[in-house]
Length: 452
Figure 1 (cartoon, rainbow, N blue to C red):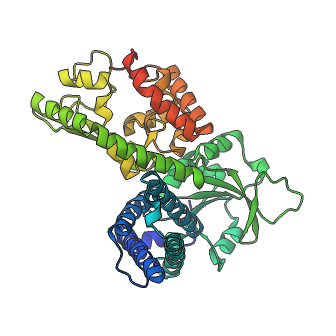
Figure 2 (cartoon, rainbow, N blue to C red):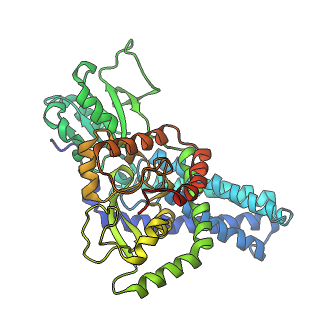
Figure 3 (spheres, rainbow, N blue to C red):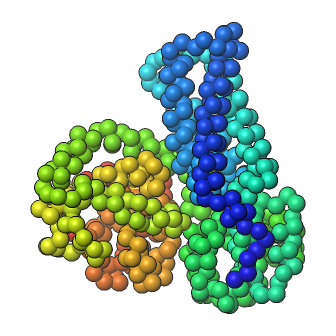
């Protein structure tokens, strides 16, 4: 593998990325506050807002931070390409003001607010947050944060396109690795993970893409774009093209969720997740107390799992096993399960702390269930399309779970059945399907023989 044009991200370091994102988050909150005050001042001639306006500002701050966080505005990994960030800003602000309008209407207090104030506030926020990101993206040391990190898949010796991509003055991508399809194809997923890639550019003639490479590209939880260089007018295009460094780029495998769909799912997680935390908090406190009284050991069990795009996160569960139980799958009548733990697992009450994973943005209420890292790698080696599950955030419940796919995975057939349900969910996702799965989940738990 050859290093491509420059990996500015590596020079910046993850620590500085986190600091930069904290600064951007703080500035966004400041913009929201100033926009609210300026809008009120322009309408009423004074910035001294009454209490309802302050309440609206506080609600807007929470909603915007939650929606923006779910769309990657403050990712400590890296915020991502500037166009996607600007789209996420607009979508988050639209969602924020829709929530404010809905609350004002349902609370029958809409007459207390000025429409011109709301429009001015929205306009100021959009312009200022856009200017903030455009400005930061032009700062020399931070500019790579707002460019897509791309892996170029091209034959060895094909340096012309690589040089043009690196020298493109208005480039929106950084080529962080250049891979040869023959030499590096078998480890394509690992190379992309190590490079923290957002997109893979395939600069290989269609005849050079065999079935094995096609499957690996399809399974990657990234954007996959075919680069046609030089442009060929009569080449069959399979999607809307764009020009990058003089080459035509056509997206082959678009993301499962993007734009409005991603925002709807994130708002679903925030609204329903927060509601469930409030409603179920007495039960969670009771469960935590019972687990603690049963014996020594922590109340929570924390474990690393693969999440969206293969990123590792820490999942939270109530402890149901004795300490030092290892990572072997839990089977029926497993002696490692505590007495309280057996009841918690039977009713899936041990999963309730994952609501905080949902609010953090690591998980979703509905999605493919995550597995322990060691199991995940074994499963990926058993079912070649397993990695496609990572194209969406893992969930607390899913289409597979409401069809009885719970408990220990005993055979490749069990795993294939789960993966088939998970991929069917990814192909047919909708808000209605999520709500249907959430409604079915408690009903299925009551009579599920695989819950143990």
